[in-house]
Image 1 (cartoon, helix red, strand yellow):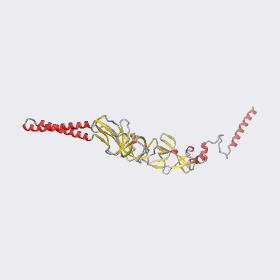
Image 2: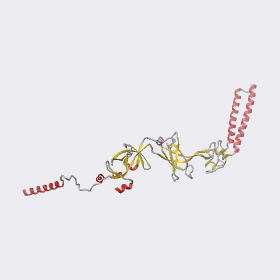
Image 3: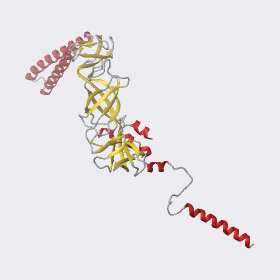
Image 4: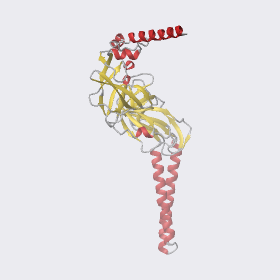
Length: 366
């Protein structure tokens, strides 16, 4: 029994001696038996990164929507009095000069109304003269004569209306322009003001009509710059916000706005669909940087790696908007800050970095 106890003590002492020899005063390394991981590599050598200086800006997020292209001076033309259409002289797509006859009513009905109005006025005038003579002899009262005077006044008004309708029994082009649509045909009975021809004057130019949500309109004002483009190509056309409606459409709950264009792509027609981008005027100061600098986004919150003295500092920012590969943010970024825009996936707070130029350089150094 004593022999067995001495053997156990000797084995334990031998194991303790081997451990002590491996951890002598000159060796402080802890050997885990595993290869160094990514964190050890990052800590051991500077990480190659591409860096960019942030920019201070007052730009606001652009408002984008879809609208339709129209002539600025589009109008629906009709007759001032109802009647039977005798002629519609134009077709859709025709260009006309100012004063061109677009449509006519049949003159027979207009002439009949005019003749009847003239006869009525003549009869009431004769009755008034006779009434005034009878008033002098006491046969008629003053009140009766005044009724006759009122009838004459009414008849003269009807005569003027009939004369006006006869003179305007034609629809004339108010300016040089284009016939957009023919809405009526000869023989059709129309009421006063019923559209017969849709017309567009060419001198006023083009605009795009858009409906925008209430919140978007609050950031815009008349005069803000904008641009529009066809969904099928044709290039971007610059313009300016010309009008903002004073009310909201009761059905769509959108506010109508109009973007005046400097020009339009060739071959377009009124009613073409167009995409619109409106740029609000300057707002509060924000930082603008490459969207690739943002990491670990959570809603509108994200982080960037700011370079200071060869190391990076993880900094929180609030994202306002994205556009064209750029981001506009708020945050604790001192003026002149430089942030990592390539190589962020290899960084942690405090990592040592070396600046290189171009994305390919970062890839080659990894």
